[in-house]
Image (cartoon, rainbow, N blue to C red; front, side, top):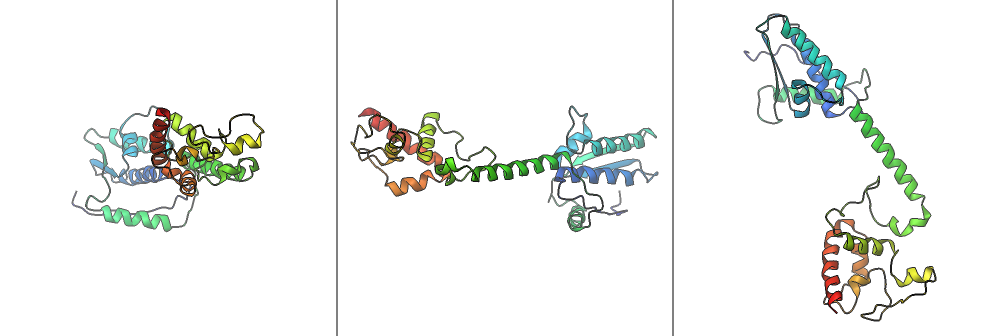
Length: 257
């Protein structure tokens, strides 16, 4: 309790180990060394990962990443604690950068571990999931680039697999119009012409051919957009909510006519 440093150390675990796994591994190594000091009556383990702290303190309802290391740490600490009645174990959450004495030294050891030689490569459960996500993303991108039938969508930036940002919270009706305009699959003159549909090709309000962005460019709207500006915004998924808000106003105006 006098602030004396007894031991320091670091280890490189490899790129397929997450921060939580490194915290669990560090806690286990610290516990191994702490129990070797037989004259100690208390062991304090301070971590800045609250998830690992909760798992060391409480019983586990389900297995998680580095569960074997968590269980090993608990066994080491419980065995040491049960040998004498007065022994205590404290596992504390210490947020990073709080000015705690020794925190800078711990950060320095962590950086050395990142730069060190990997003696025993590890793959944790969380690391394996990340690897699979990366593989799925790469496979999806490769497949997507080879789909010649979806060329209108190639210009729309997306975050595979199967996610396109910016659509959360957008009304389904408005989103349907936006997706139709972005893909070209909808009530548009070019689409009907492609499949030789026998149906009205012109807008009932302005009597002009219905292009992909016609819901924003119709001349009967109070503030119609230009076609080039419309095409630019339709290709930008980050502008979806703004495009939807203008579409909502335009739909109300057209319905009142």
